Length: 80
Image (cartoon, rainbow, N blue to C red; front, side):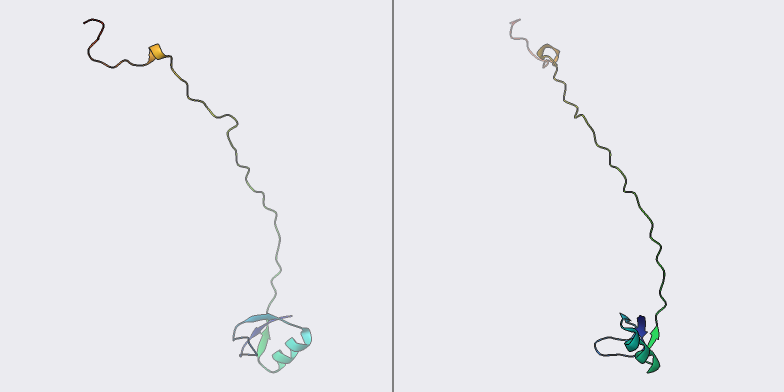
């Protein structure tokens, strides 16, 4: 049974929620040291993890042919 302590008991402090045997809980409640903790029924639900999408293909850098590369502007050594 779960109880909430109203007074310090052993190593427990006030407002601690403790799970203990029914006999011990009944004794502490009768002595005024604890009150019965209301149990909350939990409802379990299923959760679906999102699926991460990843790329299947890594794009490659397209290399231009050497004659397509921009030529530096300036003096043409062939023209002299």
